[in-house]
Amino acid sequence: MTETPSGAPARLPTETAEQQARILAQALPFLRRYAGATIVVKYGGHAMGEEHLAETFGSDIALLKQVGVNPVVVHGGGPQINAMLKRLDIQSTFVDGLRVTDDKMVEVVEMVLAGTVNKHVAGLINRAGALAVGICGKDGGLIRARKLRRTKRDPDSNIERVLDLGFVGEPEAVDVRVIHALTGAGLIPVIAPVGVGADGQTYNINADTVAGAVAGALGASRMLMLTDVPGVLDNNKKLIPEMTIAEVQAGIASGMISGGMIPKVETCVEAVRAGVKGAVILDGRQPHVCLLELFIEGGHGTLIRA
Image (tube, rainbow, N blue to C red):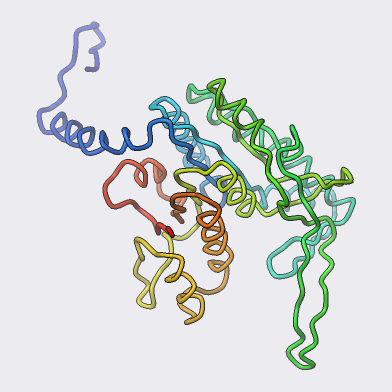
């Protein structure tokens, strides 16, 4: 119950109180379901770029911890990297949506992702009353990376050539001991998608890929991938609330799933195959979308499960 300026309890209007009671009653079974569960959240896109959404995200992650969930956050930072490269007058080139990363650029990527952005995201959660710790894949040997190998077929000659993306990597192994140490101490890990090779080389890794690998290694109950779209849409542009792996593969083959959505659903499929109970593609532009997905019947995105 709230209080008036005089300190006396202030009663909510009956209709408002009943509405809040119904919401709590609906959420209770889900609170029980996820008590003690690990939820990996990939944070990026407009949810990260807009201040009011960022503050809401921080408070939602803090709330998850306070109700007994173990959230693990993996964040991106493409716009922030672009801004820093522009300030330093370093030109970027992209191949199939991946930033070609030379030795000079990988230093900037690490500085921005593991530094400025990582500490900002952790700060959002800390200000909301929880305890978050910013780390990157190099800390504690969390993410062992290898150079990403990509090939591209020439449409005219039909010859495949190997693409050199520089120091762009992919997870080779995830050592979750540092995550367990943090969550066991009541802390929330906030992970920047930077990994380290066997030779000590730093690699820039796609944040979606890191989130999927971390969720799989943890055997997470859910992986929530915040994007700038409501989820997977059918041919009539309507949201598909749930898909199996087989339905995802059929959607890609038919062309219903196309463009930038393909790598996102493929990441979800790989996470589910690795042991995640369900991966959800959500619209990060919607305030409190993580809470709506986890604690409201029916969810708010596209759930992909085995």
